[in-house]
Structure formats: structure tokens, C-alpha cells
Image (tube, rainbow, N blue to C red):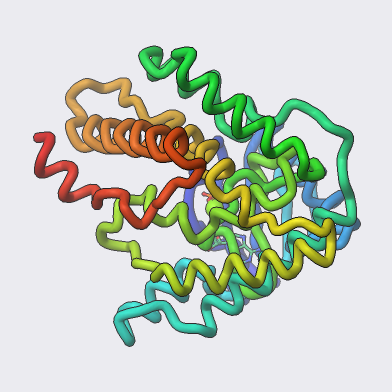
Length: 301
Ligand SMILES: Nc1ncnc2c1ncn2[C@@H]1O[C@H](COP(=O)(O)OP(=O)(O)O)[C@@H](O)[C@H]1O
Ligand SMILES: [Mg+2]
């Protein structure tokens, strides 16, 4: 008999994550959202996605719960941080694990295509972004989005994670499917190393070199070429334009006294504006050129 230890409150939804004392299981608690997340994860597991096996679900004290097997003790984000503390850079072992899990997800996604369907609004949290940043709702922004969506229409639609990134990737697969929704193939995995830049490069972050990013994308292109005959990395700029929205969603602070949150919101607005400029001028977005949050904050206080 094992007991549950509290891990953390869930980031973007009600509920919490718990780990069994023997470390073999994780339990999430929550509401209706969690029930949908668990159902999706069951479906994904049945389709060969690299996701934790669900071993129990139910209701307890008015809350839904889902119990799944552990995929390991640390995420690739934690591994990357340990690498950097040890040798000043991310190890090739961590990066090859990132390519391996990404390729595995890409294969499972490509094997289960969906009919064409609108996807941008959900993946980008577009309604929230425009509500919190009404000055960004301009013909110029809509044109850039239309251009990206037109280009992406050549890729098959698949079930996506939407919040794919190293914190949700373990050597054994991908956790935390709360946001899941339809996406063009490659949307999750292609920008996974680039999006580290949106976090601001402070404490608890790391730099990924251009060579490391290129090697990761080459591996994904090879996988995608075998699946659909197209290199998905050609769409990195299109995917990153959508990520500029995603990382701006729910950033506007409701409490005007929270200067730290205000700066972080302004920072993401600046990244959105910069990403848009770059996308318009060549279809690519160079996240390596994004400013660090502390430098931005020093200039904008
Ligand atoms: N199946 C699992 N295997 C290993 N670790 C897990 C598993 N599920 C959750 N975790 C750990 O719990 C943390 C929080 O879970 P997650 O679902 O990502 O919550 P959040 O929605 O807050 O991001 C993860 O970062 C990871 O460390
Ligand atoms: Mg998570």
C-alpha cells in the first residue's frame, strides 16, 4: 500500500498532481477538464502515442481523478538544467532523447490523420490574446495569420498536445495532455527547442545552440520525410508565429500592483511584435535573437 505525496497544483487548470510514495504512479485530480484529458490520453495510448498508461480513473470527494504510470523521475527540462549545471551546456544525450521522443510522437500522429478542421483559435488561445491585447487585433496581424494558415494547409491535421516542450517530455514519453487539440503535423515537436526563448533565459533556463537546434530539426525532417514526404522544419516560422500567440495568452495581470507580472506581459508583447516583424519580412522567426527577460525588464522599468 502506497500513499500520495503532493507534487504541485496544476498550472492552467484546477486540481493537483500527486506521486505515489514508491514513485511508480502519478495521480491528477480536477474537474470536467481532467475527465476529458484522461479520455483523450486513453485514446492516444490506444493509437500508439508515447503517453503514460492510465491505470485508474474515478470520482473522490467531488473531484475526478486519473492515475497513470510514471514515465521516469525527471523531465528533459530537468535533465537539461542538470547538464548545464554540470558542464555549462545541454548534453548530446538529452538532445538525442528529445529527438527520439519527438520522432515517436510524430510517427504516431502521422498514422492517425484527422479531417481538415479549424485549429488556430484553440492552439493559439487567439480569443484570449485579442481580448487582453486589443491593439494587436489589426488587419496586419490577421494577414500574417492567414499566410501561416495557408502555408500550413499542406500538412495533415493530427491530434496535438499544444503545450509540448521539454518540461512535459520524459525519456519514456509525453505527459500533461490538458490542452490537446487538432494541429498540423509538426506543430508540437518542431518548435520545442525554440520555445525555450519565450521563458526569458533567466534562472531555470538554458541556451540551446543553433547547431543543436539544426540537428534536432534534421532528425524530425528525416522522420517526416518518411511519413509524408515533406520536411516539417520548412514550417518552423509558421509554427512559431502561432507560438507567439500561445505565449502571450493569459499574461495580462488583473492586479495592477503586480509589477513583475506586468513586465512579463510586456515582454511577451514585445516578443509577439518582434516575431510578427520577422515573420513578415521573410517567413522565419529567429528565437535566438529574442532579448533576455532581465535585460528587457531593466530597460522598461
Ligand atoms: N506520468 C508521469 N511520469 C513522470 N512524472 C510525471 C508524470 N505525471 C506528472 N509528472 C510530474 O509532475 C509534474 C506536473 O505534472 P503536469 O501534468 O505536467 O502538471 P502541470 O499541468 O502543472 O504542468 C511534471 O512536471 C512531472 O514532474
Ligand atoms: Mg506540465
